[in-house]
Amino acid sequence: MTFLVARALRKVDRSAVLAFALADLAVRGGERAGLLGLTPPLAGGNVIERFAEAVAAEERRGVAATACRAAPIKAPRKAR
Image (cartoon, rainbow, N blue to C red; front, side):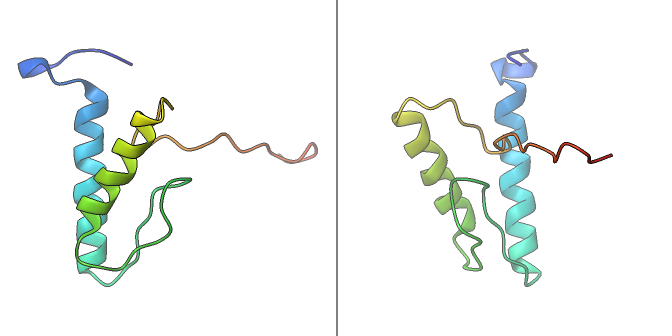
C-alpha cells in the first residue's frame, strides 16, 4: 500500500518504525528478534541499526522488501 499520511510518510515507513521499536523492546526484555528472510535472531543492543542495514541492503539489491513482509508459506493440502 502506498497511501500517504501526515508529512508525506507512507504507511509502510511507519510500520517499519513500529517494527524496529517493538524489536528493540523485545531485546531489552531479554528476547531475541530477527527479520524473516533477512537476519537471524539477534540479542544484541544494536538491533535497530542491524535491521535497518539489512532492509537497506535488500532495497539496494532491487528486491521489494519491507521490515514486516514475510515470504508466503504454503499450507499442507489437508490443513484446515
